[in-house]
Length: 352
Image (tube, rainbow, N blue to C red):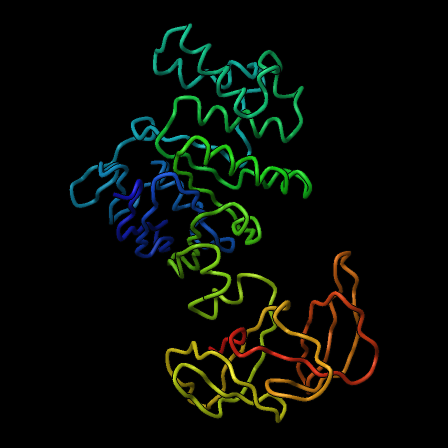
């Protein structure tokens, strides 16, 4: 049985529909990322799970127990859902010590002093702050404050922990470091985590399952590999990764493949379209790293004129022009001014 189930969830703010029938299932012990642009509904969905927003239709179940069910008129308040929540701002009390911040939820549950002390110390040790229990939030770095917020959410061993963009206040270097220890901590504890982010690289790094939202609807749900390598829609293909999006003309469709024309040259790709466009045009998407610099003409290759390059440390990003469209290419070698050939592997060229 899935740990967390969301069924046909609808929510509106006044006349505006924010969630439009979300269905999702999250397995026990998995890290799930709700991913999408600003306004996609991801934070609203997280807050609905927590009980901080009230949908008007659908159901939310944890371990098979309904915490919200519009049909049965069930809507448990947040404190009855036994969920851990890490806010984007961390929401630490500045006048309380680290120990007191983490212990707060246990005291609300009227646990004994000895049990509180043991659980708080275990939680702080788990996030690497066991020696800082007597400090105040103002005496901690941003990364340490984040760890306190996570320890507070984990201390009473909730079945599900919810994290609302917990890395957004950290600088780039700390974010990269935090991804791995947060994932390791969650997997070590064996709990289910629902993690909101708008950063697709963060979602790819930390998640077992990504739920991609757009305009209040679920676009695609699956493993990071599914969304990156097998996007089901044009939106999913363009949102994930760094891409070239090209306007092409469809020439032929055959057994899941499609031949398209770009600047008078034919390319084969994977046919991901639901139906043909009225004017025979289509959109072709290919990741930057999938395009290869080739030595000369050949199958699925395009002539291109070199424009410029930037150096990224481990590789170069080159900009080429194919007719009136541009193509970006990642390569570990320099490119020289003049004519070039670009190879687009058919299995990496998705036509929508």
